Image (tube, rainbow, N blue to C red; front, side):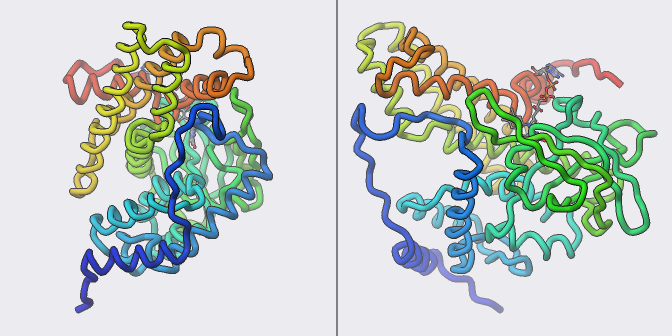
Amino acid sequence: MVEVISEEAFEKEALDFLQSNAEPRVEITRQWGEGSDKVSLFPERTPEEDQADLKEAQSWSKLRFDAGFGWITGPEEYGGRNLPRSYQRIYDHLETGFNIPSQAVFGIGLGMIAPTILAHATEEVKKKYLRSLYRGDIVACQLFSEPSSGSDLASLQTKAIKDGDEWVINGQKVWTSGAHLSDIGEIICRTDPNVEKHRGLTGFVVDMHAPGVEVRPLRQITGGASFNEVFFTDVRIPDSHRLGDVNAGWTVALTTLMNERAAIGGGGGGSGLGSLGTWRLMELVRQMGKSSDPLIRQDLAQVIINLKIASYTNIRAMSKLAANQLPGPEMSIAKLSLTQNFVRICNLLSEVLGMKITADSGEWGTYAWSEFLLSVPGMRIAGGTDEVMHNIVGERVLGLPKEPKLA
Ligand SMILES: Cc1cc2nc3c(=O)[nH]c(=O)nc-3n(C[C@H](O)[C@H](O)[C@H](O)COP(=O)(O)OP(=O)(O)OC[C@H]3O[C@@H](n4cnc5c(N)ncnc54)[C@H](O)[C@@H]3O)c2cc1C
C-alpha cells in the first residue's frame, strides 16, 4: 500500500518548492496615485501580449506540475497526485504568498473542460489530454454558444454527422473565450435533428488546429479581443474523442456549465476585484471628498456587506463540491450575488465620480474605472445571464411555476 504523505510533510515540501522557484510576494504599498490604476474584469491584451503572457504562464505551470503540485487531487493514472482536497487548499494558500505569473489563461481548461473530460471522456482522451492540460502544455476553450443559441443552448445547430470511425462537423460557434490561444475545445453538436432538442446533442473534444477550423477575433467594447467566432467546415473528429454517449451531450454540457458558474461565482473569493480593488473603492470615496455624504456611505457599506455575502455564498457552493455533492442552484445564487454587486459598484462609481467616469481628466484612479463599468454587462451575460439565473432560483429554490417552454 502506498503511504499518503502527511499534511505537515506536504506543506514543507510545497514551501521548499515555492521558496526555491518564486519570489515572496511583497505587500503592495497602498498609496493613492502610485502605480497602475487599471481596474479590469477582462484581459485587454494585444496578440503579442497574449502570446508573451501564455509563455510566462506555461513556464510556471510546467515547473509546478513537474514538482508534483500541478494536479494535487487528480487520479495518478492521468498525472495527478491523488491527495485529498485539503492538500490543494494548503498549496493554494501557500502560493498566494509568492509572485507567480497569472494562470488565468488556463481558467476555462482547468475549471471547466478538464473536469468534463475526467467525467465523460474515453480512456484514450483522458490519457492524451488531462496531463497536458494540468501541465499547461495545452490550452482549452468552450465551444457552446452559437449566433442563435445562448440561453437556449439546447437549440444549437452545429452538426456532427458520423462517417465511419469519424464525425464530420459543420457550423459556427460564437463568443468563444480564448479560442485564439487554444489547442483543444469542448464542442456540443447536433447529432439527431429529429428528436426533442435536448436529446439530439453530443459532446466532443475537437483539435483546434485541425483542417477546417477557423478562429476570428471579436473586439469587445473595452478594446481587447478575448473572445472569438469559430467556424467549422468539414472538420473531422475521431469517434474516440466523443464525450459520453451519442445524443447524451446535454448531460455533458451540464457538467461543464455547473463548473463554469462555480468558477465565475468564485470571482477571487467573491468580489472579483481583489483586495486592492476594494481598497481603491473606499479610497476613491475619500479622495473625491464624499466620505461624509450619508447616502454614499450607505451605498459603500452595502457594497462591502454584499462582497462578504457573495464570498460566503460561494464558500457554501464550494463546500458542496468538496463533499462530492452535486451543486444545485447555489451556483446560480453565487453568480448572481457577484454580478448584482458589480451593478451596485457601478452605481456607486457614477455617484462618486460624476463626469470623471465619462471623460479622462488625467486624474489618477478616476477614469480608469470606466473599463470596469464597461465590463460589467459582459459579466452579467457570461456563464448564463442574470435573467436565466433568476429563473433557476425562482423555479428550484422558491418553487415558483416553471416558465412556459418553447418547442
Ligand atoms: C464575456 C463573455 C464570455 C463568453 N465566453 C463564452 C465561451 O467561452 N464559450 C461559449 O460557448 N459562450 C461564451 N459566452 C456566451 C454566453 O454563454 C452567452 O452570451 C449567454 O449564454 C447568453 O446567450 P446570448 O448571448 O445568445 O443571449 P440570449 O440568450 O439571446 O439572450 C438575450 C436576452 O434575453 C434574455 N433571456 C433569454 N432567455 C430568457 C429567459 N428564458 N427568461 C428571461 N430572459 C431571457 C437574456 O437574459 C438576455 O438579456 C460568453 C459571453 C460573454 C459575455
